[in-house]
Length: 354
Image (spheres, rainbow, N blue to C red):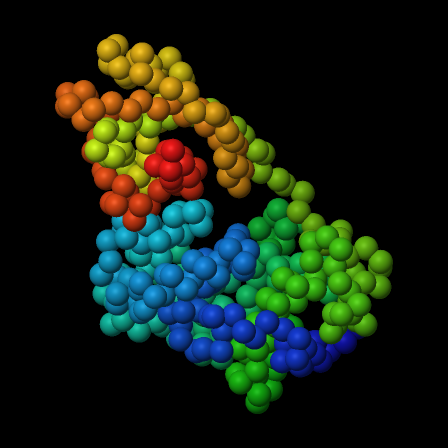
């Protein structure tokens, strides 16, 4: 490393003050609740997507107590469309833990924060450093990129031992001295901002980087080779047939998905592994009323879902003896507020506008 760690931190802090992101709705606060909600929402999700969800979420649940008292369905309803729904389930469980185990007050150290549901090492460090000034490093995907490029860390991050070594490097770069605590919030935010706006995965803006003069990757002329990670999760695909059963009073049949599995805990249309299975689940007299809906693909992180919807709309009396698993008929004014997978919500909304 060609410059002292202290100089690195000082440059990041100075850059963040002038050029970093300072107007996001979860910034300029030491409220651990708002910081925590934003950190969970921002996991694998872009800022532009999170903005609308964050505002709605904290308006409905302004503090950890109100979130803890809410039903999981209410939480999933506000999360619907944001994806990675395990985050919402863990958010709800974590709120209940904070209230039950910590009197509604978030712990002030990363070590204690990490014991809460859904809070990993980097998220715990983000909360404790941003809100309480604790001198701990974060290491999300963006920060890994900044750190590995700056020091030329080319060990394979597919190996856990190398990730642990990178944590040590990130810790060594933290602010030092008497002012370390007061500078930690801006330093942590600066590392996030650098990774999100300058040290990009492709076409990094090295010319506007505050630490470019001592960055190993910039000197080598190939910053995109960092970070190194050889193991990649293989993409898979799954075909699913869906039944949109609707009565003439506007109700649709929905059931809650089991945990674990695709869309666990969310309300969903009946799902089938094949078209034959779907047709066998529909009474013979109803089959002539079945209508296909154009198939489409919904892309998850590591899986493509090929969805094949069919609809059947009949007077409510026709459905009186029909059930599809452990579900129920739900009116539109109710299902619109439930936790629904994004493609299911889209299907239902399209159907009601026809």
